[in-house]
Image (cartoon, rainbow, N blue to C red; front, side):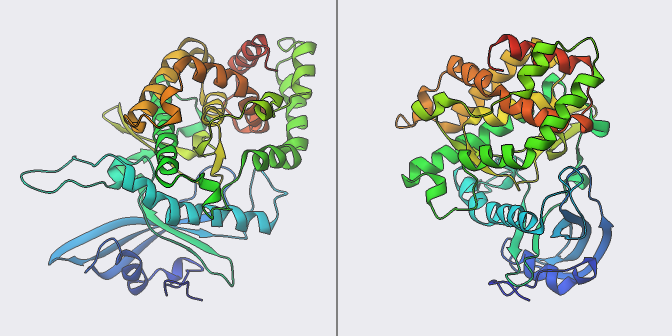
Length: 399
């Protein structure tokens, strides 16, 4: 069945034909003619996958010049169950896939309209303009859902062919990688806040009922992940005998990720990635030099305090050395990039968001990161450093 755009949603790799790809690319590449498509097949990586990611190359002509486009089609696959959350229903899978479709189709164009124009690879008198080079989000050519089958598709640039990759074997991120990932989150948070300033209406109220609120995230986390978390705490204690005190384990068992103070003192809220786990962050290197980053898998997009993403990022990706010795520098870099993204608009409430307040909020929100870290404990590159990180957070008095 075709979507509102008249473009059919593919059910499998066999449906990715030249005529279909040409339809998909026409909006961003008017006049393109696709003559052939070479389907590589599934390249899905990581854990918790709900979609089949099919890589393909499209060959054609545009403006009289031969072109080759390396793309991926991310298609809902109801036969591909989550490996982390096996108990999630089909309805949940539909919900999170639709959220990503709406993020790419509704929000990204608005973020792009506010992004700094890209001047890379521009010469002479060529006109500069905003492009996805200026965003840390993959370029998406088409995102839609078949209203009958509820199968979704997102056609995006193939980041792997551009040299991007996730960290292998669940490795922790280095200081420089954490810097780049934190800066990427700062861009997302800052641009989303500018969108609110421009419209004067909070994002969730702009007919975006698919964006999860703070209360949705808290309730869903405790209800769906609660049993997994309690089991994970037991596994964590068993994995480090003699290194985790009874007091620490008792505190973890009673962990509360909702702070009563938030109800009394509302926090600044921004559009958040919601799941900045290592498998959702792709880095690019040039001769062993870190050069770029992309945030992928936008199925958990949420409206949260900015430090929720940061707490998740640190707890699920940082080693003890990075967390303990470089945390302040990474948070300072995030704050700098946030202010840079916001610009000089004096009406912005985030302009008065100081680095010290950011650090304080980060510490308060670390229980959220601890919770998700332990839920993923079996899938993390865990060593004694994780114990030291959680012990340090315990000393802050927030767990």
